[in-house]
Length: 331
Image 1: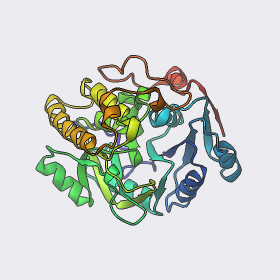
Image 2: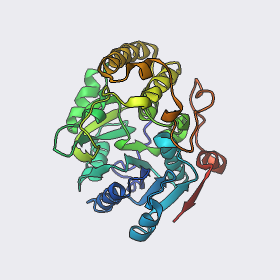
Image 3: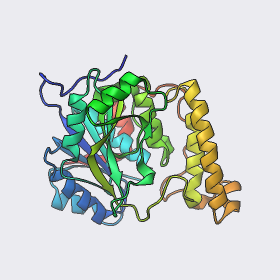
Image 4: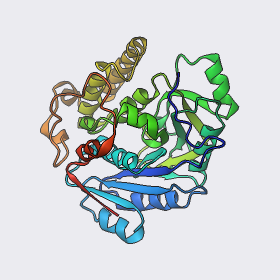
């Protein structure tokens, strides 16, 4: 039985939607993203920006151009994973019904949020706990880095229900415009901050969607302004360490994937790693371990590894304060 809360369903009050944008040293892109967020045909009820200790004047620019935005300035770069954990904690503490997550280089089309809400509200009960946008690159092609994984074992009923609202059933998605049910997030926990980057969105969305409904909504369109048109198996350089470490962590964890799914995704992962290694210009670095250069400034390697089971549910100020340390949050 799905866990969707039904917020925003017919007969209920409109849901409180809080947008969360995570940024690091990409001030021009962030300002473009925020302009698009504030220009939505259905604007979010609040916007949170998590600044991962940027050094390019990002915080001052946000305060100047968007004084209504809630700005969380982290004391060090916690990566995308830490940033989204922080932003999610703030949103959940602010009575959000739904949280709209995106990177700072994501530019949503004018009806992106409205389309996500419409698909969620029209879907037969139980409501989906996650709805993802269609992600394009700057030239209009579908971005291969952000294609949600179609649910491999979706039933006919799931496919029919999704098709009825113009969507597809999915098993995971990226942090490039997804609308998630805050109630389910409170039950199943925040993104794993220890991941720093890579696979944090895969782990979080599969954990959220296990036993629940997720949709890809083609009517909701965003542009992901990455520097290059690249897939997930493109050589990432020394950051490949995080891909391998985090995927191993995830595959050892029971919460996100069922046993059969772990076998399926492990095989897919090994094939992708083989392609990445074959295409790499520096195979020695890929096979010889993790050099210190791959650790971003101000953030060492994560100690230990995430819990094998569900992260703690988010409730009360103590959980929020743990997720925000060290940081300051201002309006």
